[in-house]
Structures are given as C-alpha cells and as structure tokens.
Image (cartoon, rainbow, N blue to C red; front, side, top):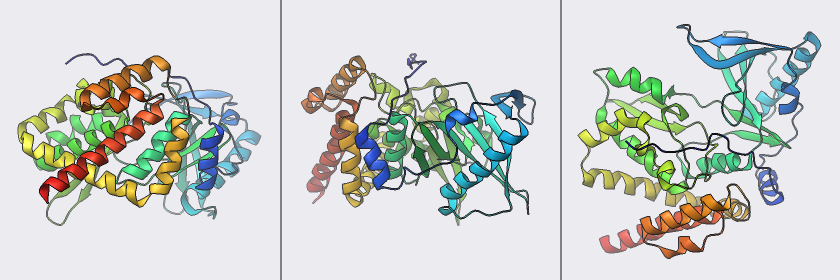
Length: 349
C-alpha cells in the first residue's frame, strides 16, 4: 500500500461574502452569545483518558467560576438553537468542556447532561473554516445524512455525529460472528463513491463512524464522515478515495473477498443515482453553494492544478483542465456523474 501524503497543516480559510450570504439565506448564520475565542480563555487543563486508561488526546478545560457561569448559560442557548430552534430546557446543564489541540480545527467539545435521567449529548465549537463549511453543506445535500451546524463570524458550531469510530469498529465489531459482511462491504463502496464524487478527502478510519441500525431480518450499516477539514484541499485524487488508505485495509479486504466487479459497479451506480436525485431536489440550494465555492479560494494553485489534471485523465474529460478553482472541479465532478447516469439509463431504455 503506497503512502498517501496529507498536508499536516491546512490553513483556515475565511468565510467570503458569497458564502456568508448563502449561510444567512439558509439559516446557518445566526447570533451566538459565545465565540470560539472566548472558550480559549481557560485557566487550566486536565488530561482526559478513556475507560481503559488510554490518553484520548482531549483535555478537560477549567475556567474561573464567573467565566464558567457565563459560558454555561451561553452554551445551553447554543445547544437549544442547534437542537430545538432555540427553546431552552432548564433541566439541561453543561457538564464538561473539552479541548483538543491535535489537528487543524482545534475543537472544543461540550458535554450536555439531562439532569432528570443523566442522558448526555455533545456538540462542538471550532474556528470557522470555509472549506470545512463547504464540506458540511455538501454532506447535507448529497449524502443520506442531514447535518446540523451554525456559524457566527469566526465561530462554527457542529452537532455530534453518533456512531462507532471506524478504527474501533474494525478492531472489535468486525471480529464478531454475526456481522453481515455483504451489507458492510456494500456500504463502504457507496461511502467511497460519495467521497470521491464530492471530493471529501482523508477518510481514514478515525475520520468516520459506523452507525448500526437493526433491521427486521438483520442489521443495516451506514458509514458517516465526521471530519470535513479536507474538503477539496489536496491535489492527489487518491486522497479522496477511502479505499487507498492503509487504515481502511480490513474493510477493503472484506470488499475484495465478498464483492465482484459487477456488484461493486452496481452499488456505485446506486449511490450516483441517489446523489443525482438529491441534487435535482435541491437544485437552487446546490447552485448557490457551488456558485460561492467556485469563486472561493479553499486550496492553493498547485493543488488545484494537480487535481484537475488527474481527474481529467481519470474521467477522460478535458473539462476538468479548464477549472480554475476547487469549486469548479467539484461542479464538473458532479456534472460528470449526472451525465454518465443519463447515458446509462438511455442505454437501458
């Protein structure tokens, strides 16, 4: 397995006016009573370990009592905006605030607890990064998953995406006897296709989760991206294909073992058809997003040049070579998918 290079430090791209206009129009940009910068004013930190004593790379942060009281009220309001449109329930409290200095976004994770039954939930506060926001919105439009997030100035708020982390799933759940290997392999093929078509990169095992849902006869698997920092940033096309990351080898080997070329192509086509229908159902929203993305700078010229030529060769489509931005490359990729589907169905008829 060849090594796929990922930039260790990706710049944080500011939100430009066209994207800001899109976010306001669709209710993503709203007033928040606490900012990312305010959360940085903590006094101390405590390392956070999991149940087995392993360092999680997160730290619980401590504030002065007056600062925490202010933050707790504001964070409850944000959680209410995220979940109920703003209706605050008094029995919810901020139990803990964690901080991760590892990675590009340096997020804060807020733990919310229901005081009636001790049920808990999380949400995240990060620096607003335009490329990440494009990734979140493309996920919301093109995938089977709805995404809840809010933006205010330089602050981004994201909901917690529940599921078993991919690396943990491969270490434990994949070893169980009752796993449905065919359904899991099918879902990975579809996930791989979604990532490649919309150019979401770096989907190594710890950047997605596996959601397991009992079905009336068996179980259903859904793989969900949880990290959108690498939306249309890198220049190599393989960065956008989860199948090429060594961390995903166990599930890739499962696909090779249980799926033949015809089945794989069928599942890829199924996902392309679903994405094409979602684009059609949200055509005005998708157009506004892509219009903003095409005029935005979310990568450097060298990476844009490399990716457009690699995709032009991959698809045998010279339109990619005319792209001047990552947004234009994404638009051409989506158009290529729709065009191929139309040709496929014409042949069937």
